[in-house]
Amino acid sequence: MGTDPQRYLDHLQLRCKLAAVDQLEQLFFAPVAALFSQHFGLPLDLLSSSDGSQLPGWALREMASGGRIPEHCEQDWNPLNLIENGTLCDVALEPAFQLSFLYGVRSATQGGELQISADETCVPLSPGELLLFNAGCRRHQVLPTSGPELRVVLGGFLRLNRSHTRLHCYV
Figure 1 (cartoon, rainbow, N blue to C red):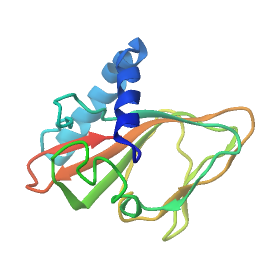
Figure 2 (cartoon, rainbow, N blue to C red; figure 1 turned 135 degrees about the vertical axis):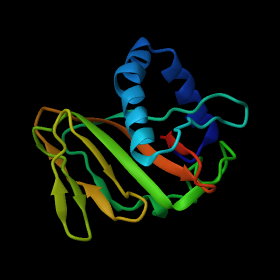
Figure 3 (tube, one colour; figure 1 turned 60 degrees about the horizontal axis):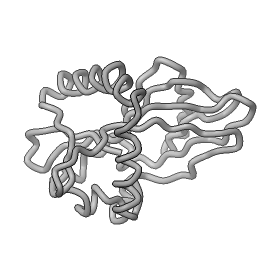
Figure 4 (cartoon, one colour; figure 1 turned 45 degrees about the vertical axis):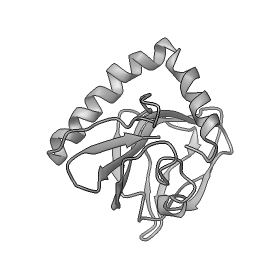
């Protein structure tokens, strides 16, 4: 994700060269993609850039001690997001269906909970748990972390195309 297409594509090139990415693709993303496809009754297709290269459907995110993500909803960033604004691919996405998925790998020593702002629900994402929520419309934040353990999650966004025939994941 980001606002610079070349930086995004350069990071994608680095990611493609890592053996660990292939392992996580098989151990994490393939089962999650199958689960989403089965749950929503639609095929899940990865997005491709205008040059035909496949865009990632997930990312590994680490948050060091003191890290946090301020309150937002993804629709705040849609005009800047390269996939949402059509800079990297031409799939038209359904604006009312913008889910985020997170899989807990490691919890921070303290903090790092996802707080859904409307009702101030705090979700402590434990290792092995998968969370799917409406990040597009629901304001949320990740509370500050502290201590020596990093908060580590695998995740991305799950989107529906405008014709409601396919699901797509991206980061």
